[in-house]
Image (cartoon, rainbow, N blue to C red; front, side):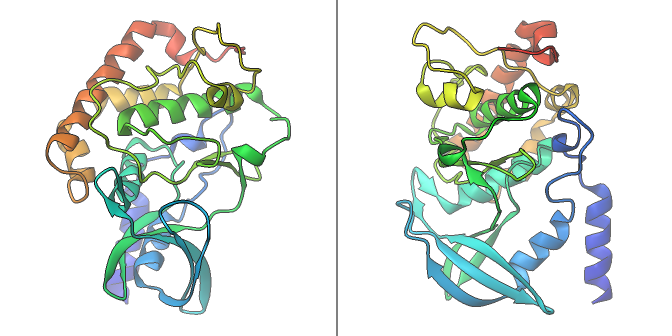
Length: 275
């Protein structure tokens, strides 16, 4: 027991600071106890399983209990070439590496001999159903900017309005990341995400087919982290889940993102109100 507690304490002390702590205002991370949550997801006893009934991946909501603590999670076991539970874990590991704090804690877990992943059940509203005003639109759009950058990195083709949630304190949470890490050599959004009603809805404006771009901007610490990220750091974060050419393409997309940010110059971190 002592070794487990010590390991969790060390992990907490060495974990990267989340971008979510400094986006807009100095606010706490959504999951400051992520090391404990990962341990819980891996070790807790599953007391109940229930099909959610949404999505083509047949996810289940599971109830877990450990040392008197009860939590819920999503179990996903889809294992197809372009739709895979391993992508969910890899997306979470990259989120941790970059310090984003947007992807809920997610771990590999087998249930009754079936490999899959468990992702912490989170409370919020999917963007499709969200109708309130954001109290700080610039803060929100910075989070959306980070989401589009992250989706460029992981080659996500499936960030629709039901695959992103708004927390009660208006934080952006990225769920359903199984259709990622595709064979994609370009940036899907080019960091600006133009052209669709979905992108306009995320940005908080009416759709305009003539709109050329959204003025995305990022926390300076994220840009610093992207520029300093090494090949070995990235490879070690995802090597258990993303292999071969698809892993190499993550590195290539990272270079494209760095080049794109450099081309944006000061606009990349412009914190002035944007439209």
